[in-house]
Amino acid sequence: MNPSRPRIPEATVARLAVYLRVLTGLADGGRAGVSSGELAGAAGVNPAGLRKDLSHLGPCGVRGVGYDVLGLRDRIARVLGVERSRPCVLVGLGNLGSALADYAGFGSRGFEFVGLFDSAPERIGQVIGGRPVRPVTELDRVVAETRATIGVIATPAEVAQSVCDRLTAAGVRSILNFAPVTLTAPAGVDVRQVDLSVELQVLAFLDTQRDAPVPALGGMA
Amino acid sequence: MNPSRPRIPEATVARLAVYLRVLTGLADGGRAGVSSGELAGAAGVNPAGLRKDLSHLGPCGVRGVGYDVLGLRDRIARVLGVERSRPCVLVGLGNLGSALADYAGFGSRGFEFVGLFDSAPERIGQVIGGRPVRPVTELDRVVAETRATIGVIATPAEVAQSVCDRLTAAGVRSILNFAPVTLTAPAGVDVRQVDLSVELQVLAFLDTQRDAPVPALGGMA
DNA sequence: GTGACTTTGTTCCTGCGTTCACAAGCGGTT
DNA sequence: AACCGCTTGTGAACGCAGGAACAAAGTCAC
Image (cartoon, rainbow over all chains, first blue to last red; front, top):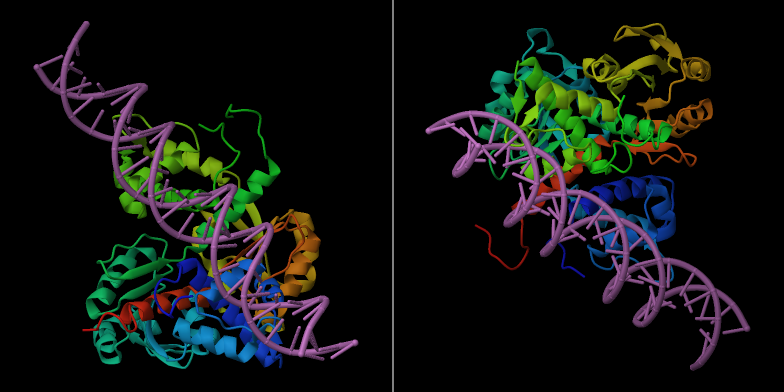
């Protein structure tokens, strides 16, 4: 129903990325068409919800038939902005940072790490994922030169805020933070937090709740 | 208002884990008391929302004064089940898996990796985070012996489903999956999906939307 | 002992996301 | 050419999360 851009819910955007991954797999497998039911099953969501998500991009299926795999894939890719490659910088090349830099999935999804930065001298010069690690002192210059607008923080928690400050000062406007701290950024800068231990703790809570659904009443130990 | 256990929203549980991290930091800093406003600021949420989250554990603050840092920390820890150490197994010791196994934050939050598993012969025997890497053939036995109920999957996407099947067959009932595939698990098994590229794509979309907020209506700068 | 201030805990309300159910439309078949 | 089955797209209701405002309660000052 919508023209194209305005107002796509964030939850929908996250699912569109999942659909895109599933569709890419189907396309590689040679599939030409797919129904909402099958696609929803492969993505782990409700078929009606999937159709509603897709309705935000306008009509893109054929009634009575289903969706064209390649067409839908390209359409979602265009909406998500995967068509053009986006320059990103990554700060912190510890275990997690190295994993991110080496992850092939980013390149095929329109992300290119144009700069890897670390403060440890022994890491400078290492080549990870085809890119050399540079000292953080070059961060501002590289961000300005490459016009990178996305920054990923995979540093220890203690320095994450200062890295965030430097990134925003250099012009980065979207930050993905893996450090277990809540970052403060200027208005207009979007920060997304991924806390691995939080995910685990939610899992542990559900585990606890399943073991002891109703303890006794209210009395504590 | 609630006794203690039944019905805490999942979104609240995720935030409780964040509060717990902030409170631990305050406690280490020697702080004795804290108000909802300050705690909310440090956690990046609304003060009223924080109080509502905390109300699920019953009254735990003092009106006119605030919250006792240590008391609140212990209370949240008890609700989240951090008090007792939970045995977890981790499958896939690539870059990401190694980062997880080596992450000190898990141990201090009540998670203990009692088994690290990989299928690559060159990784067997390596010691990561103080634990040796074992062949996946020992997975079933170790899960049974340690009674591990939580499994973490950090393998390539192609084998994630088969690893999931083996974990559930061995008795694991909570799974945290980092592989970019949608897993199918039996009823009663809780699967949480963390897709790093999805997070990045949501960020990229918001970036795109900001650059071109209205396609054809409002003129751009 | 009384008053006033501070902060919590709760309640109401608004908005969003999700799900269910139906109408519209297209292809295949006779 | 007309019918029938299948699938999409949309409209409406339900439930939930988030935010703001108010009442309860405890402490500090005098």
